[in-house]
Image (cartoon, rainbow, N blue to C red; front, side):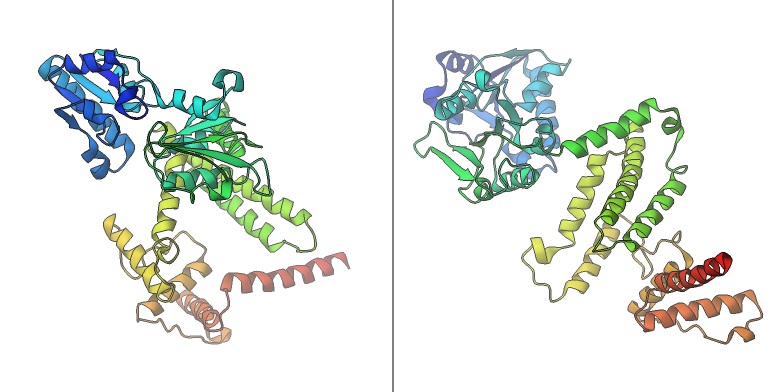
Amino acid sequence: MVEIVGLGPAGSEYVSRHTLDRIAAHRHRWLRTAIHPSAHVVSDASTFDHLYESADSFDDVYHAIVETLVAAAHEHGEILYAVPGSPLVLERTVRELIADPRVRCVINPAIGFLEMAWARLGIDPVEERVTLIDGHMFATAATDVRGPMLVAHCHANWVLSEIKLAAEDTIDASNDECEVVILHHLGLPDERVVTVRWSELDRTLEADHLTSIYVPALATPVGRELISFHRLARTLREQCPWDREQTHHSLVTYLLEETHEVVDAILALDPEDPSTDEHLMEELGDLLYQIEFHAAIAEEEGRFTMGDVARGINDKLVRRHPHVFGGETSDDLVASWDAIKSAEKRAKGLDDGPFAGVPVSSGSLGYAAAVLKKAEKAGVPLSPNLTTVADLERLTDVGEHLLAVVAECRRRGLDPEVVLREVTNVHRANAEQRLRA
């Protein structure tokens, strides 16, 4: 059996006599974290603070805590588990313990940070219909919420930054007059309740595990359109007969078609004609659906999700831009970029050779241009022979000639795909004109 108690929102004066009695009743005690003002009331306790420093993700931390507590309960029969605040408010490990069939849990009520927050804000959360949000999941959890919201787990300034960025397009004041309330160290001598503009959210104080924010209102729910689109893709996969039959391989043709249509829309952009933007927006939407479609198939198979895709590209872009996020200068940008990509490939056990990353499925002109570029960078430039068309007798001669033309385009700083397309369009227009004559 695991008996769970809460240590209140601040100092030991907020810990109930009942909680102290339950702590004293156990010999085997665990603290989720000792970094809490009232943690000292649980003496002779083991903590899980080391997991927060060593684990790769919060999911790994929570899983390790639950496994340790279940094993300890089986070994000792009864143990105590103490958490900050209330055990039933945003305590992921408690929820997982309650749901675990291997162990029985006894939950003791406690004062949480919510009561302190309502007192400082001077509001009735029921009348105001306040929604409680986990700061780590703000971008998704606040999807359908217009506000007001109390956002917890704002334990670091980077969390506040992510919240600010997620909401910056939906704040109910384009001139940044909309305000948010920062609640910091409530119930402690250094308590701060600060009302700031959104632009100052992550620059007002050093946030920690006793920091939360109150959002009065959002004009438009955060990420509503993207989340709605995400759900639509999964609904179609589940209910449309054609969508259900598709596989990664069967969608390749459509992926290529939509990509080419995006290129066509880009080439047709006219700075003087806003309607051409509408066409590009439509084609980008079609291409985005293909990406969502592949993610939906992978999610169905239990391999990865759209969230994994977004997280992966986010992390990759941060890694590859140390001059933006790491304090480095841009002087050695190219060398740094290549070194980072090479290190990533080696870490994944992928080919790190000079031609790694050149997609063999790309168009032949683009493929040739990429190979020529890679060879030149590697110090082994290719030198195909450019001969006259009349001298071409074999297929290999024609290939050599084409490769030489691509090399000449590179020498002149031209994209062979663009050059050939433009010339072909000229001849196409001439042919159409002759047909109309």
